[in-house]
Image 1 (tube, helix red, strand yellow):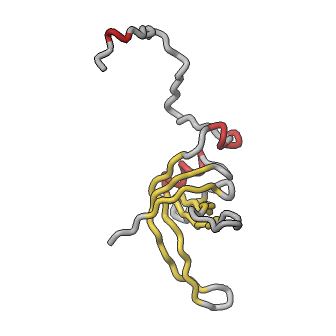
Image 2 (cartoon, helix red, strand yellow):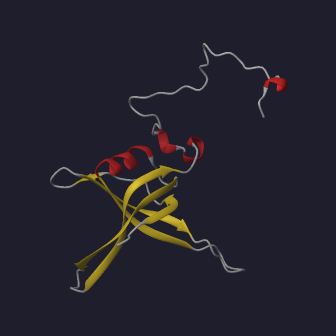
Amino acid sequence: MLNNVVLMGRLTVDPELKQTQSGVSVLSFTLAVDRDYTQQGQEKQVDFINIVAWRLTAEFISKYFTKGQMMALKGAIQTRSYEDKQGNKRTAFEVVADKVYFCSSKTEGSNNGKSLKSDNVSVGFDDFDGFEEIGSNDDDSPF
């Protein structure tokens, strides 16, 4: 069977990491996803899709994503049944995120003070010590 979901949208709130009783990280949030088709004269429609992330994926989202930031994700649809307070049987549909990706620049996402750098790796693109500029002689170019 095939159960793959790929979505791109914006987080509706700042993600809040929680732990299960056994200490497993879990994160639930809603992704606002624009619909591709808009009828003439009508406003763009948005779907609000419930997402769940577990373990390292949950921790990554909590650390690097904030409200309003664009995110792409890959996951699977999951359903679960429950009883509401009035005793009615309900079914919840949600996407379990396996992989998440940044879709906006650092400045666009603003991150509310959260760093986009990894704890162990720092890459500087302004540090070009030891490199020489290559001349632009078109006679040497093979194509």
